[in-house]
Image 1: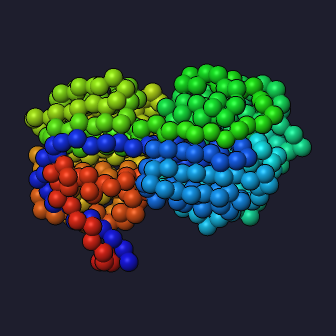
Image 2 (image 1 turned 90 degrees about the vertical axis):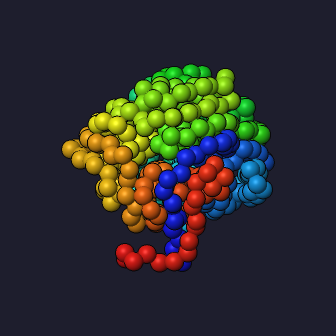
Length: 424
């Protein structure tokens, strides 16, 4: 049975909300547990659908995984299977991050091609090329990435683009390779720093986390650890946009505001009052209609592509005209088609979208294409006349724990409703 959200317009969000562990970090940390025999404990895990899916992927190669609230205990055996072809692989993009650990530890892997959000092509060329530099062969056969090596050795690896996934897979293979690996043009995201921190806790030798150059000195083996996931900056930013769009007053705790410096600076330009609390959180107060600002997605520390739907939604209710430029995933602008159902005034041209703000959106049935688009449509529904039906909400559940409950507690009125949509 399908589910949708009935989102009642006219809400002003006020109060405090806590942000838990980062979706874009926890799944990779779970995969890193494959590198060491024994039980690794990961705390501050978000209670989202992707965590049990990743647990199924790990079980498919022989791990025992127990999830209890916000804690995941992963027991990795001495003998692992190199085949990760669980049905769960097709449901989340992050499943491909088991490739690096399996090649690093077993010197071979057969990993089913991943699924995930429909936001555009995300090829695995850089993942494979990095493994080849380390001494492995890597091909695509029968819907799987197949990699094998007699042994792995350090290498100088240049990434054509600072891909988070490629950086993670190469890093996790390199920590058990013989010699020194240097990854240039590496991703710099806080989630990369988080996995480097955990690998170091496991006994890896990694330098340069948070910079564009990672240096890895291979070690013979790693040991299990206990690690706390960093707060989810994308969820934190979602609440920041929610406050700005609904002319609300939200205090967001559990995320380092410095991960969101650019977002918070842009919201100041839009008219918000912003207060930060060291590395613990921030407060957003928006008293007037937001002013239009321009947004450009870039790799971190630039504006995250995951936040582009919120930039579009904010622009749709702002005073003036905004230009949004998407440089990462070409299909992100599918979100604009749904915003136009809500009477948003937007036009796209290649990588650019021009959005003219309106005073009030108009409710309509809309469909979420991915996690962030779904959350963006909910926020847009809060700014619309009437009741907006947001369909395919399983996407939202993959990225936002207790989303409906938190929104209702902050002053929104949203119901989760079972039933089939009129549209096929």
